[in-house]
Length: 231
Image (cartoon, rainbow, N blue to C red; front, side):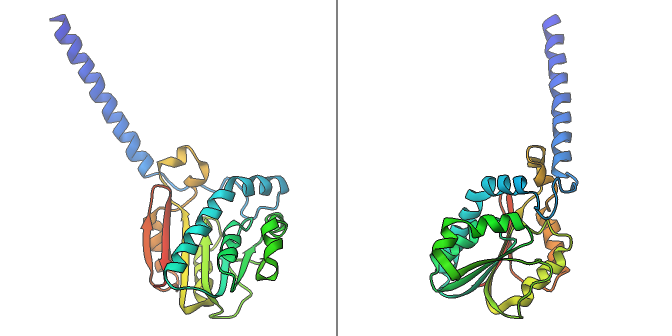
């Protein structure tokens, strides 16, 4: 009898624990968006250096991925712009891959721009790649002036993402290629604080509907949501 009661109590405790765990998981799935944990423009030299080091492999990986996609779609030459280029990892990979292209990286962070401009890769590529201080929400370029527009990890960061999306649409040629990727908010936010300040895929979809950006294809993975257009 005592064993039976013990078994029943254990079952009850396990049942309660499962209910609490399920409730906790649902709460994490519905995690509310949090404010940024850092400044929008990285003006602090030490923070910019650390950010560049921590994100170098990631940005280069995206550069190789986009280079492969562009190559498979027949792209060979033209102008490429990287919105919020960070320390230049993605832009430099693309400039190396496409020798007949002009690649521009824009950012408001002077420390990050100095890191990009001072890299050995940038020195070897010469005038084919340039890094400029510019606001992604107000691009100093003419309409339909770029064949490829790239935006990595910026949608959750800027003050007015719709304005940025509209600027991307404005400077992209009618038959151009567009690649956007950003962190996807999920329970991983309990591990990495920046994820808590990002958008969910559904929030990104709603945001894009409010912009003038042409229709493209959304997708998502464990860590990222993406938007792409261009055959």
